[in-house]
Length: 109
Image (cartoon, rainbow, N blue to C red; front, side):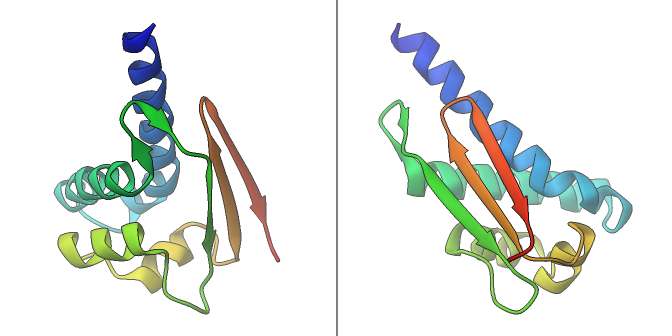
């Protein structure tokens, strides 16, 4: 059961990272996107992962403000500019709700 929870948590975080970074493939070199993915996964896990359980959380992403700390730190670590990233995601405000095995996204405020 423990291994299943860990796998499920890892899968959820990887799905989130993939969702957030996939549009950047058209904007940044593959190496930069891979670095961003690595830093983003580590930052999100450090903030929201308690042992093997993923605490539910919501990310609010907006072109009018800096992103949440895990995303901003990943930007600084990888050299990705937040305005370009949010533009690649559609340029509108996003609410991303993350729960075990589930991502829910709402576009617009």
